[in-house]
Image (cartoon, rainbow, N blue to C red; front, side, top):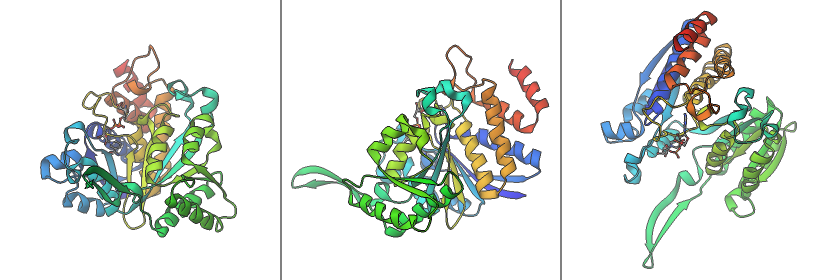
Length: 370
Ligand code: NAD
């Protein structure tokens, strides 16, 4: 197969982990005889520096003309004082809107090799296998007005939580469809005891549930969900929620696996290419130091193969390679065991690549890094 992939490395550790994912995809291409053509484009702070815009037109065109998009991460302290339109995160929000990336899927599953990396007790995280479905193009991050004003002489500020009913329905239907192929349970998270938007969300969830008689629906308030994720995470199958709640809960859920650096995500579009990105940010504190965990980005590439290209065997080859390398005890500093040697980003990538290619290559790599 021949596929065109737009790579948006972005800022901070984005370029380091994107390089890793591209290396792994090239190895998959070699092993399974596919041709992946990579187009590199700018987004975020890097794009502001070179073009004056966080999402240049060329980037958007490249994305629209490709079969899938791989994104590293955007942002950094050097742009924190920029006006809202010139912040790297604006590029991210814009690309979600322009490509209609309405659903962000964030799988979180227990990995026995990383049990000691999680701050949560072993008996609580054993068996965790959940999927967070986050609405991505509405809610507080997009609602207008969003501005500071002077109200009767006093400085004040407003952000707007706005949703259309059809936007709620679209994400809820996606969650129920996904649950059908899993353990058939949807937990819809809201704040219906306080917010009108959440009361409408709950109503729409009930409506959608009627079309999926074999899927169980439960409602949970977001504050309780935050607690239950730590107390009893195995109760969850599919969690569906609006944009900001999903943003926060999925970072919390990443700690079940030990690090933000482990979790991939897929953003689905109804109209164009889907976008794949790790859930972490640009990690300016470790950028350029060869310390970033590339696994989240590499697993995002695996999600791309499975979801956008129907390459299930190829995706499994990546996931197995990651598991093999972790099981052999190789870890970047964010998940390394106490007293053990941490592996650099590039070495982690090389080891995963070798495991994708074949076992002979693994022994070769073992001797190089011994
Ligand atoms: P972050 O995810 O960048 O980092 C949080 C912590 O996790 C840091 O200590 C970092 O070192 C660590 N970490 C993150 N990814 C890691 C990896 N792959 N390997 C090892 N350690 C990792 O979040 P933050 O510090 O709150 O934000 C930094 C910047 O990233 C901000 O400008 C923010 O706006 C941006 N951001 C971007 C995205 C995105 O591009 N999708 C998401 C979140 C934050």
